[in-house]
Amino acid sequence: RHLAFLRAVAQRQARLVAQWLNVGFIHGVMNTDNMTISGETIDYGPCAFMEAYEPATVFSSIDRGGRYAYANQPLIARWNLARLAETLLPLMASADDEVAIGRAVAEVTEVIDAFPAWFAAELLAGQRRKLGLQQATDDAGDTALVADWLALLQQHRVDFTLAWRRLGDAAGGDANPLRALFAEAAAINPWLARWQARYALEDANQPAAGAARATRMRATNPWLIPRNHRVEEALAAASGHGDLGLFKQLLAAVQRPFDEDLALMRYAEPAPAALTAGYQTFCGT
Picture (cartoon, rainbow, N blue to C red):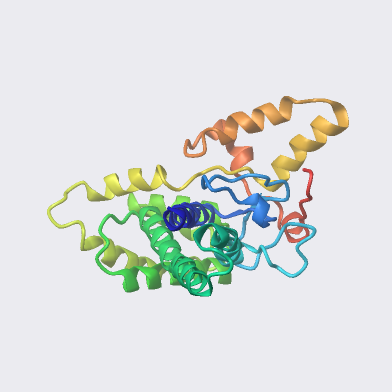
């Protein structure tokens, strides 16, 4: 039962961290005491959502080495799970039984070593949904398609959230809003052709496939996230002036992340690049 428990926790964490990455979330302080056996996000004071796509993004003021950077979160999750596994060993075998301890170590190690594959499967499943794909026919091909998409976003410093959202517009037949996010509008064209060829394999005998895909993607890729400058704005008003108005407005907005409402446009706009470049979050926030 201890092994089954560890496996269940590891699989929940694989799903959670994959969900984080798929919305650009950075926990910021993924210590062992900040992970739950339930697979829920807790104690995320120094957290933030990434804007321009950069896997090395760090916002926490205490993370000077990038230990909890956006792309390092699955690695740290595995490390933390290994510490959990260590606490289970005394329950699985008597300390004076070397054979039993050795067997228990081998068993929990097998679970820890399975984590990267569980995480990769969860991440790719989420990425397929974000791409509007429904069939898992080519893991290697789809992984490469996503990797090249993210490389484009990184190279051109494109906003992570809006890029995925505008890809939904492209699925509906209008790629211009997506191209507008790139300094070189044509840079995205070769990749778009590959993506369109990939989903064309799923569209045989489906006359309205494009519209249905766009609808699915807009229900998966948020239009609005808690932008860091809007969070700071709300915090400053509340802590400096006792005014909770901006906080309540922000809270109402982020409860509708998929609804593209022009009245909420200020919450969907990225922060100025100068603010994002030096942005820090702190424990206790």
